Length: 242
Image 1: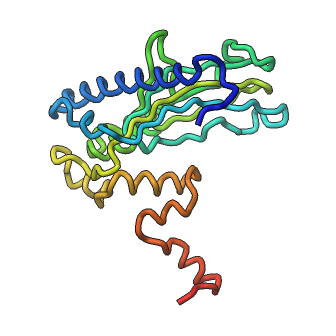
Image 2: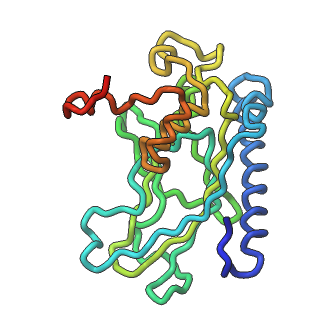
Image 3: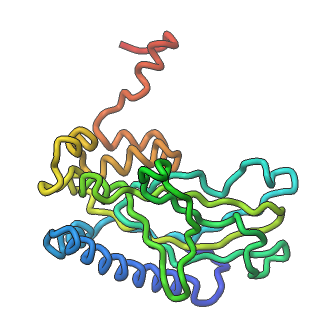
């Protein structure tokens, strides 16, 4: 669905952006496969006809009473898809005009892989050089590689001054919903099997995750063929039906 009052070329521009980011992602996935000693197209092939999504993102301004109270634009999380491509964002000042970041703590931050020296990882600003994009590993790629690649924790922090907004976009690449999510044979170590078992269809994984994070209604679980997720709560409340 497109807004009826969208500016000229809005739809065309967003679709073009999504296609370009997708092609970049396919190239990155081919390179990742080669680096892991796998057939070059193993990850890219799993993406064919997947439920990919390009999203325009708008982070709303905080009020004077909300800033510097721990409120963030996006809680730290990892994406449940295969790969996320981010072309960058921009800030809008209180007058709605594009401007530089109002402080040095707001925007996208990524948590690096833990090391003995930094067991919690390190938070780094997710700002790519001009003409480049940020790519984040998602949970699907972590599962397929048995944890060789780790899903990238990230957070979108808000400015310490009121009235500022942020605009950005993201392209989320997914494996096809019929793909079985389980470590590929090369990565099926005892630890990987323990961490990522049992195998699950990507479509099932997607629906359950969307319900868990509130982006799909609980009724979406009916598509999984099991309709008694709330039975225990009903029993505890004394309202269960036999």
